Image (cartoon, rainbow, N blue to C red; front, side, top):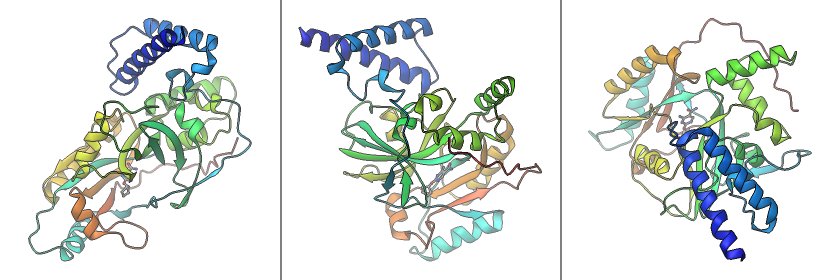
Length: 330
Ligand SMILES: NC(=O)c1cnc(OC2CCCC2)nc1N
C-alpha cells in the first residue's frame, strides 16, 4: 500500500520539481500555472494523509515551520572572502600585471566576467544532492544559519538535478531582489502604511533576516550562483565550466556570465554591461573579473582579504541620496 502511495508521491514531487525549475529557473514554463497549482494541492493532500512520507526536499516544504527565536551560527569551512576593487582601466592593468608577474612569462590568461550582483552573499550546502544548510557570509568565517529562509527562494533547488554531483557540494552566490519585485513590494507596503525599503539590496537583506520564514516566503527574492566552496570531489578545470556544470545540476546563474580571452575583451564586457545596466532586471554595482583557469587561481592564491585572482571592477558611484536605512532584525 505505502509503496504505491510512495510511488505516487515521488512522481508528483518529480513533476513539480521539473515544472518548478522551468518556471523559476529557466523562466520558460511548459504548464499553465493552474495546472501546477493543482498538482501542488494534490501533493499537499497526499502528504497530509501520510505525513510520515514527507521528505525535506519535497517541493511542498519550501515555506518553513515556526518562527525562530534567533539565528544559529555557521562556521564556513572555506572562508568567504571579499573582493579588491578596480575603478578604472589603469587599476585593471595593474591587476593583470600583478598576477602575470607571479606566473611564468607569457602565460595566456583567460578571464571569466560576471555582473557584480548587488545583494547578499550566501552559501548553500548540498549533501547527496539535497539542500541541507544555507548561511550568510557574515564576517567571512562565521555566518548565520538562514536555511529556512533560503528554502523559500523559488529558484533555489531543494534537490540537485541530473547526476554526478559531489557527495558534499557548497554553492556560493548572491541572493537579490529583482527591480520589478522591489518596486511592487514598496508600492504594496506604501499602500498598507508599512515601511518601504531604500533599495533592492536592503529589501533582500531585510527579507533574509526575518526570523519567520513565512514572511520571507512572501518576498520576491532570487538567487544566482557565482562560485563553488566545499566540494568532496573536485570537478571542472575552468571557473566558467564549473558554473555551467552547476547550471546542469539545476542551479541558476546570471545569463551574463562570459569567458573572454584577454583584458581588452574584459574592458569591452565592462563597457557593454555598463551601457545595459539600467535595462538589467537586477541591480549591479560593477562587474567581477576572475582568472578562469582553476589551477592558475590556485597558484595565485589570496592576499590578506581577497584573492589575487579576482577583482571587482566597479561603476562610478551614482549621484543618489543613500538613505542610511538600517535593516531591522524582525
Ligand atoms: N556580487 C557578485 O556578483 C559576486 C561576488 N563574489 C564573487 O566571487 C567571489 C568568489 C571568488 C572571489 C569572490 N563573484 C560575484 N559575481
